[in-house]
Length: 99
Image 1: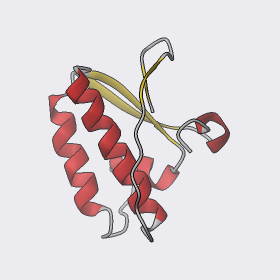
Image 2 (image 1 turned 180 degrees about the vertical axis):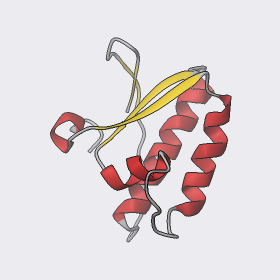
Image 3 (image 1 turned 90 degrees about the horizontal axis):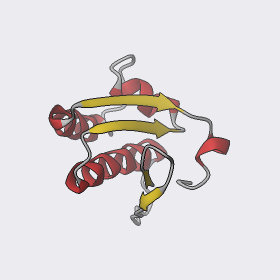
Image 4 (image 1 turned 60 degrees about the vertical axis):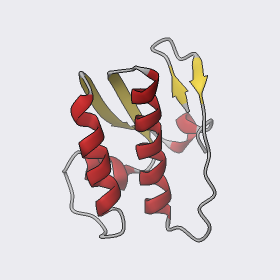
């Protein structure tokens, strides 16, 4: 789910990922959301996610599964075009629209 700085809805997306591990699904959703924000013209981005492992992995605070390593690399490549970007863990209750 993409929102503007006031919390207003911009767009949302979904993808069918049959049998994908949760980390792969969460990291893929993050990559797709960042890509969509960049394609829409946003360069100052706040990413909120409820999977703490993915958030900490993208911040390079932990090493994580080989399964999401290529997705994380895609994200790191994408964010080089951001003016600013931050990643924040939010509890699932605060992320109901995305779930």
